[in-house]
Length: 377
Image (cartoon, rainbow, N blue to C red; front, side, top):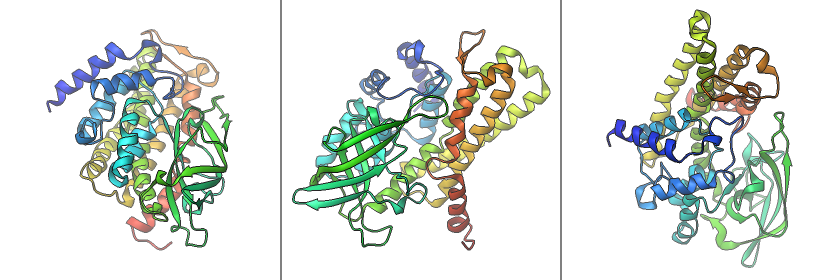
């Protein structure tokens, strides 16, 4: 593929089809709000950039994926991660049976079905193997009881993929299975959680005797942990994507251009240091993405991506709030002279929990210490 021609094609497509009013939002837009955009990408054949072509994906290599996302960031496309595209789809391609692939993959790509991720629980966040949501086999159904928390956009989801305990007597990492559940099933209750920025992306999801067909299990019963680890690797590379810091960095550049900050050597030095750090991460991200492209498992070293990018994200927003001056501490949009807008305080608030979700950075450092550096626990 001619990378420059591909970059130009992506740029022109975004310019023509992505609504102006959705560009550079103060907070990330939901998949439900932007489902028409996913439909357009699907019609173009761009619904799933990283999926193999035989499953309807673009089959992009890691470098091309970076180009694709880079053009999205430059245009101010800030949409919540699509768990169906980035997480469930690759898992079904690898572990699902043919009926599951036929039933779900096409609707994921087209945006017809929106998926939520049911992993974390009140007592099982970074220590995910401690999960207690149970699924008991009853004839041709599993009966699910328990609670998930921090479930992004669960209130808008059609389906949810769950980690459940199917053998309470087994060791923590054993006796766990992977279920696909219809969110309209009787017995599911959703409660939204308001965060510090006043938005309610996160939800609690309660399961009270929810009946799930037995054929909704992916893989074998009590064998979900290996798939969970595979999916967590995909999640950590998603959470370690350069876009997490590139988007606010582009906002900082817009602010700097507007206020003439690049004439200040102190600001220029700080901006350049962060940009170089993000560019270095770009190179590391491509290496890890290439492992996935080859169909191989990511090793524990992928944890460094999540640490690296989330801490860079926080440094970017620290500088953004500082140089926004009085606009950095009020709940309002700041209009810039070139026509774009930004909300410095919201970006700051959004960056704070990034070092906690998806496995805290402290846990990620423990993983690197034990599994990569081979130091004692």
